[in-house]
Image (cartoon, rainbow, N blue to C red; front, side):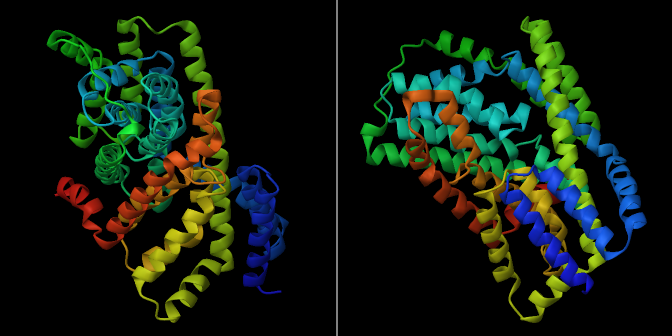
Length: 436
């Protein structure tokens, strides 16, 4: 049996294990180890198991992951982000679908300190959905808005997905953050416009909310956003201004969030302990999957299947745009079944060489990839954000109602992806400007 046939056999075994609900990290490590053993011998397989994880973990940038996670979990458990929705609600409630728009802005602000779609959806679901239902908003619009807006969390820095992608593809994490920031803002604006248009066409979706807040109360509510603003400005002004690296930014962000929570008097021992425990468990899970993906990369590189696949596709003379459309379809399908980190790390060993050969920028592709993976967070049958919202709101809305609510947002997301493929400079102009 040739090396390519062995690789194909074990890739099939990998997908079988994943379909059988074996954890992705375990599946990746087991299949890669067994594949190396079958293709070579026990010594090479065992040696790879010792060397590859060390080489992967030897990246200093990797230490920014637990630091940014700690920053986000501290902000979440000390409730530093609660003022975001209140301020947005007071200032935006007069607009058509104002509370839904406030939810989108609240999610964007929350994303700037957590980088987690799931945490963003869970937190804003608890705060915003009951408030919208109380004002007789459609359950479909209320739940769909928060589930979809939660996906902004992986686009607006800091983004754990972008950090992992940057390490694997050897792209600048800071430049990925800048490209993601552009797409995150575009997504936010598109979501707001969608809400306004839908409510204008069907006012029953969101009855007008008349706030009696005075100018003083409005500015007082705006003042409640200072904890998040201080952390965001402190971290990203220094990061994009070249004062410190992404690794240092994570440490400074974690320190700043702790100090702000102390000043705000919300940092309890219980909150700190929960933030640390969740940081450790999340980091461990991410690293196990990442190590498995590194082993898979070694296995596929030695088998030659990545180069063979790239050469085969390119030999058909298919245009790069059609190849990219095919990649988009694959990721949309994977997003329906796998969580984002697993889907990304599972496929990058094969996809990266193909993207590189077709002449697309790996920096641009990283941002588009994160956008595609986040679309998977709200598409059936998995739709992790949808299940999170359903778990948070309980009997307020059924699962089918939440999926109906995100439908129009998925359409908008697909249009954004099409625009990013047609005009790559949308992603690249800001990173290139800062690189000069």
